[in-house]
Amino acid sequence: MAMGTDSVKALAALEQATSGGLSAVELRHDGESTLWNDEWRQRLREWCSDAGEKHGKQRSEVVVVSCFAPLLRWIVTWWAQGEHRLALALDASTLSDRFTVLCISVVYRGCALPMAWCIVPAGEPGAWKPDWIALLNGLDGVIPAEWTVIVLADRGLYARWLYREIQALQWHPFLRSAPHHAVRHLPRSGIELGGGSRVIQPT
Image 1: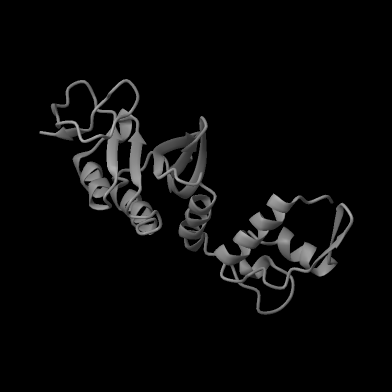
Image 2: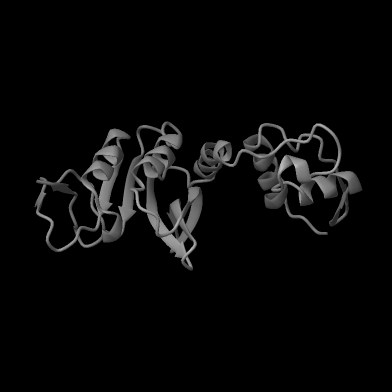
């Protein structure tokens, strides 16, 4: 299996994100090829499995939530030098009538790169407030404080508490509001979103 330099670096970042879970992966480069030790091939195949479903002794599960902050930190290190602006997108996607995936993504060149997510049952009563707060707080402190971070969300996610939570992280909410919501424009602060759109704040 051929593996480029970027892939090797990505694997190293994954190793760090999982607190050393892949620290014993053995790679041997022979020209353009990379040979994997059979034992570690098996471990990589079982990476997302529950501990009880893995072969061997003293196997543990990957706590996915613990990977979110290192994943975003890794993205930040690869950001263009001198570019201190970042856009995040909040999205809720329903899978059939069974699950809803709440996701925070980095917006990059027209693509959304998932950074943090959780899966909740679809159609059950109750708000997503605790889930969104946990996802946002899990990324707190990862992006340098001097960066400008805007957070985008469609009107279906608009809520006063969400707006305030984003502000508490020193980020700038750009939440699409429903037509009946009353909003007021703030004076220009140098933060714009295409066409001179301004930050809006609930009245």
